[in-house]
Image (cartoon, rainbow, N blue to C red):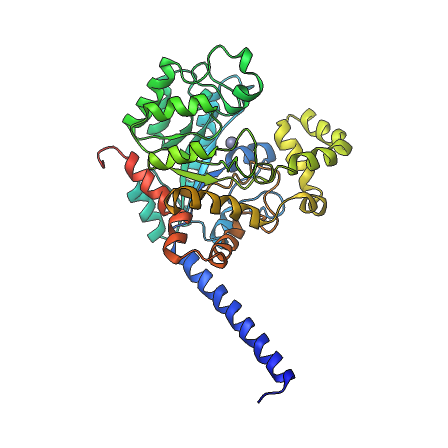
Length: 397
Ligand SMILES: [Zn+2]
């Protein structure tokens, strides 16, 4: 019989082998899966921080071309966005699309524009980052269906019906929750319903992230195609106005859609924003100095927080909390309706351990540790999104 000491060494060796095997298997699964992240705000971050995707930006942004590769990201949907304070959101949208086109043109061996599921698969086969476009906020079409058509023609494949601001035709989660009495309408107007119908017709996915509950239910009643929430979390775990109720998640599942989880600490953990505000109270002057340099307030806060990585890590939740949100969706409606929509470069604080796009493999390891099968992981990482993209493509259904 082995002595106690040998037994201890053997046990430790077995544990080491098991975790090494797990790491190997996670790597293999991660590499074989199509990884789609449905929301990344780099085009806006690029303008605010005056940087480009093909630069090396570790420590300055959550994303760059090299780190997408390190993280095994196959398809990135870039968010095309500006706040409602901009005079011409449609022109701004085209400016950001021009940026994505320019990065793609400058790096033809490393990335390509993706507009269809066939192009998506071609990008995966060619081992290039597939760049997709999603418009964030119905205000970007300036109340014109022809602008919607023109954005589709330039490659945009989803649009959130609102951002935090309501449009003349759809009310947002922000306004329905905080300013309901001052809204001229709650939910979708007749024009708003025609926007949803037009999106269905041309093959642009309806995105319900950011919309108010009434807009959500009106959109679900009108849409004939599966929807997505490109970057939202679970209200039952974190009761934030931007998160989805179980009833909404059930409706998205019934419609064949997918909820893609946002990595923002404030949507994952209800204690984060209180802790963040307490920290920021001592750094107001730094934020104001950046805003004076014409930086959008949200990005100014983000840039100040990034200066203090240790303090930020102390108030952000762990990756486990993100997995808790995912488990909740899977238990509620099955693994067919969960995905990832990081919101990297649009959020000030991802969970600890997810510093940027290079850290996506940590999610695959965590899924494996929680007992998800290879087949389930493939669905979560991207398979579910591909299903919705195909269902929205005209002539494929
Ligand atoms: Zn957003």
